[in-house]
Length: 108
Image (cartoon, rainbow, N blue to C red; front, top):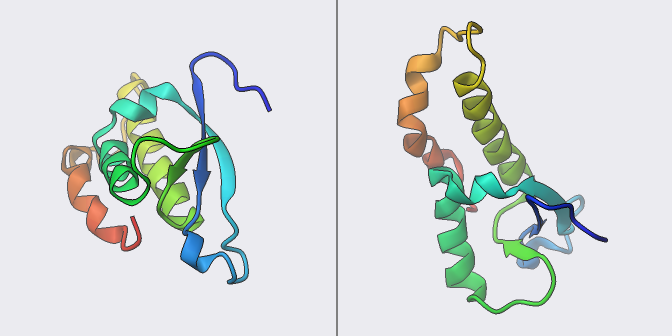
């Protein structure tokens, strides 16, 4: 499946969990801008440790689908906050402490 310019295909799921219900690796298409986000960079470092740089197919990310969805939500929430203009969130002061949120990612 072709990915449009500015986007990247990733495969999410832990291989050792593939026999469990609902943990089959899934394919997602994400904006390339994610590659520059500190939370995503940590996941890329983990991917390098697990898979190395040379893999066939989409970029493999070693975390559960649920953790990836939470990570994506955090990145989108931050992106939307910065581009929201007058739509301020009363929890915005927490955005500067996002790396601390990584403690929630046990499998990433």
